[in-house]
Image (cartoon, rainbow, N blue to C red; front, top):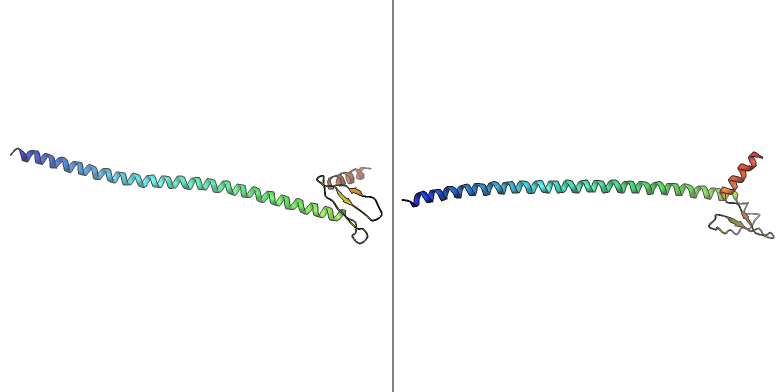
Length: 129
């Protein structure tokens, strides 16, 4: 008869442990889901940050490209306006790092044309005199 109380005690303990195991398993599943959710949120935040940084970089490059295109158009229009009529003058131009254009006219010596900045400065000086 002593076996029965021990058996009942063991059965009770077994049930209690199975219940705890089920509870811990459920808790584990919930925590795993929360961890996956948090990892996904962190990944999304990181990607949002990366996208924002990339958008800023692209914006800066677009701005720089626009500025360079505008500068190129200004230089092209400035060079065209400084050139004499091509019918009367044979031109041989050499662009140097300083931005000075050399034009050769048949029968004359080479004379450097002023750069745009020098030309603008010269025009401003003439306005005052």
